[in-house]
Amino acid sequence: MKLLLASNNQHKLSELSRILAPLGVDVVTPKHIGINLGDVDENGDTFAENAKIKAENAYKIAKMPVIADDTGLSVDALNGAPGVYTARYAGENARDKDNVIKLLNNMENVDDTERGAHFTTCIYCIIDDNTTISVVGECFGKIAREPQGDEGFGYDPVFICNKFNKTFALCTPEEKDSTSHRGKALRKFADELKKYCNKEKT
Image 1 (cartoon, rainbow, N blue to C red):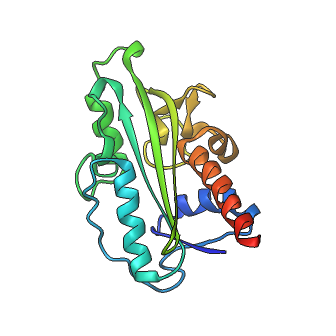
Image 2 (cartoon, one colour; image 1 turned 90 degrees about the vertical axis):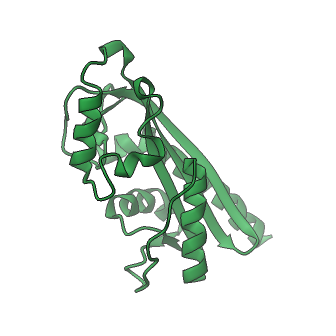
């Protein structure tokens, strides 16, 4: 199956491909197949709503199976912020570094025992007009006081995952996949996709 990722983000493509390739799923980006999905107004109140908005936009344009996700960081001490504004926390055209700096500045006076946070990934896949798959994955941890590590992207340098007690940016891709929000969501998605494929064969 060829599956269109409703994003040109190479980091997301790598993570999806690593987990879905064993199922024979070929994940492609809009750029790979020469289409432009345009600017999507992610005006949902939740990660799930935004994932659905992106998937429906891509499916309408590409007319092929699509997968979209919306991922966000929720910090306890900031009442769940940045939340749905995770990617644009420091402004509409903010870079990862800008978002991290704003987060650390806002957390500067927060005690080490109060720095809990979690990532959420909501995946929405449209296979055809009658078939959709929606799953959620979460990963819990805390916010570091300064960036640590060079792997990953986004807030990875300052998110210390509970399982490894180190930032995602210090984890290997295999370690991150085993415990990350997106890794968990993708494994759930892979299970649902297997069920769909097996059903189609019968």
